[in-house]
Structure formats: structure tokens, C-alpha cells
Image (cartoon, each protein chain N blue to C red):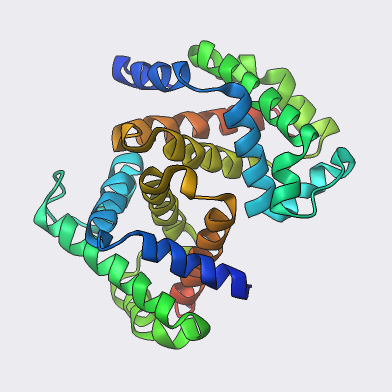
Length: 143
Length: 147
């Protein structure tokens, strides 16, 4: 699935965020809540107003988890095992096959907004494949 | 019928006004063929699609991308009658082209990423939300005559 070239490109993209991971995470979530209001149903306990501390905090968590996944890209199943359990048994978010597509789309938009022309088709493709791989692992234990 | 608020119409018009239909159309189609290579199945007669560079430089891809986005412009002019506007095109995609409507969703999402890269921060979350809604209803209208 993920070629050596893909892996290189993903590292590159992540590198280009240059410390702004938290912002990218928060923006991704905010875009998701704005464009896909049903996703808010999973956060009734959050202050979902723009710029809220909870959105920032959670965005940071999500991006950190993706960062960990990237560092362990050759063993996603193991690296994301606990998150996989969490999503399947506790959070029970609509299977990541579907829900993660929305998050992935918004992450892509957030990256494209930041990187502009630098967000090449090859990077776009690599990130898309990576997010699919993450979604597949997160969905592993659903049933 | 889909309802569009004044704000949504504004967000659509303001983005569309600054879009180069030729450039964005070509880029969106190229990215579709690159990111989701199986979509190349519809373009056997387009010649060289063997690499991202080949796809981006392919004149047939550029021309067809422009065609597709020009048609999108028609949708924008007829927001209150998308199903009617796309009735014939829907039949065409079903009966002659045999395109799975899922592909419309993929292209729509890619178009949004292209716009985001183009407009940067100006492509605000509110903008994205409106455009996600737009590509969604366009995809729905294109799928409407399938049988």
C-alpha cells in the first residue's frame, strides 16, 4: 500500500508543519465541525465554539497520534493498537471507514491551505493513502 | 430542493469569480487520476497516464478538466435547479459513460483541496463548508437519473 516514496513524502509534509501541529489539528477539527455538523454529535461534552480550549487540546491530541503513527509507519497496527481499542469499544465513532474520511478531507484542506503550491499531487496522494491506512487500523476491532 | 442562504451564495460566487476554470479544472482532474488511479479506467483513450508528470502534462486531461469545471459553472448559475440542469448529463454518465457516482464525490473533494491550495487562508472553514455542500448536491444531481 504505502510505498517507500509515499513514506518519504509523508515525513516531508509533516516536517513542513514546522511546529504548527497544534494549530493544524485545531483547524482540521474546526473545519470538520463546520463542514460536517453531524460530527459534532460525538462531542456533546465539549465547548465547540471557535477557538475553544477543548478543540485546541483535542486537535493537538489527534495530530500527535498521527505523528506517532508516522514514526511507526511500518507497523501501524501495533502503534495504533490502543487507539484502535478506544475507538471500537469506548468511543464507537461511526466506523473510521466513513467518519475518518471527513477528518481526512479536512486535514488535507488544512495542509493545502498552509502549503499552497507546495502541496503537490504526489503529497496529496501519499497523505490520502496514509489516512486510509490509519482508518483501516482504527476500524480493525469494530466487529 | 436545496436551500441556499444569501451568505452561501456569496461564498460560492466570490470563490468562483476568482477561479481559472482551465487551471483548476485541469488540476482537479489530474489529481483525481493521480490520487485515485483506478479512475483512469474511464480514460483509456487519453494516451500517456503513466506517471503524475505525464498526467499533469497530458493535453487531453487538461482539456477534459476544463470541460468538467465549465459544466460545474453551469451548476453555479442554476443553484435552484440542479437536477434539471444536470438531467441530460446524469443520463449520459449512467447510460453511455457508466461512471459509478462515487467518483463524483471523489472529484468534488479533490476540487475543494485544489481550491484550498489556491486560495490559502481565504478558503475559510465557512467557505469550505459551503463548497462541500455544493459539491455534494452537484454529485447528487449527477447521480439522480441513474437507473
